Length: 262
Length: 294
Image (cartoon, rainbow over all chains, first blue to last red; front, side, top):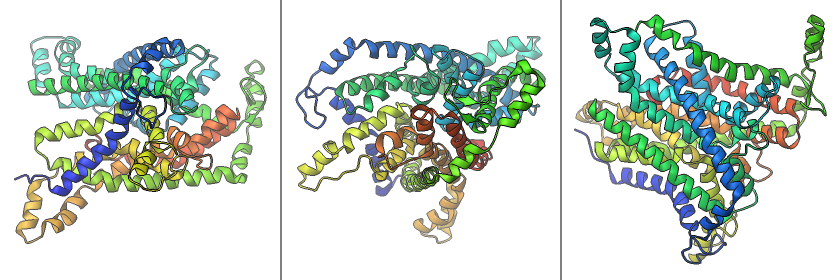
């Protein structure tokens, strides 16, 4: 029998959630503040959102960020699916240790080190820094996350269907495309969304690997944040939080539904 | 699909990681042995391939440990190194103390709320790091929301922004999901009958918790601690935005050397020192059973 949570357990959970969410809630709340002072509530207003719509630099940065995110997430997902297939299906092969090691190392590596090392690579090969260098760097960062997400799903699916198809004469590649790929599709979609979100959020790696004309939204936000608290930052943050929360919850629901069907 | 065919799938991601992950580290190592110069790129020596083997030999001869000597001689770097480790360790201990009750509490809930609560803990992790830290600036600054609340209660205002306490608070806040998840993963897999057996044999619930639940959850404790400690030790955004000028951490030093001082060899040498320090924790983490990390 499973014992229910004690009063202490409930208190710990509630305190934890308040700690996690209070700052975010306050941030969202004050993005609708008519006053430009952070601590004074001057009534409800959407003036900071209107100001945002006129901020061309911010809009350009947002557009750059979305493009970097979409392209890098796609690259990372394709490579992540390949890596996951190798790690789950290939048994022991030469290079397995290296592939798994580099994947897990990327997950925990401090971003300053990743950013610096990638920049040195681009300087060494003489690649002009800008949109593409940020995109390639983000694909490298998010590849590991995509691999882990797809790997988990791939390891849990039943292989007998694919084997049955092969027994009935279906070529292995076709059996994989027709049976396994649809089965892991929710995880692939989730991997893409997570990669996209991570790219959307990254400040450090983008700062190192970006060049003139490819300022991302976090870079623009960071330079504003350093100047102090500004309700306009609250407004753009609220929009970003809404976008990301929608994406993550959608990814979660897709996975839940797929898990229930399986 | 045959295993040999599946192994072919490894080629593209393997080459990608080799090019964009492994090789760049070699470049950082090389650069840490170079000298800083006023040029673009701002380091010397360069390999002069037009001179063939002589060029390579001259390049290798010009590499030295001078940058590392500079790091050892200047107490600023040593201070930053020690405070990185100290703050990351303090943060890890606090995270364990508040993360464990949360993870344990969630495992004791019914399956429905359990999933929702887990989702609620994960969600902030996907919300921009920068934005979540920015949210704390508005709370902690001298005329911020915290002092407004304290004032309303008739209490003395506190000055937390730009202190070490604010950095620890930021670390704990940002990394809490990383601690709760691995703890939850081990706690939820525990066999409930072990607790019942302990209680049937006369152990009080408290004693059963400390002698059965806690020891069995140690792999999760280790995984969570490493998962938090490693990135926290190299953290940049949190010490930069919440800490004062006297709170130096290695991540911030790398950033300053690179962007403000344009001393690429120094930034590289600090990165190598940080990497070597984190190598043991990273290897320990990779030996953790993969189930703990999911």
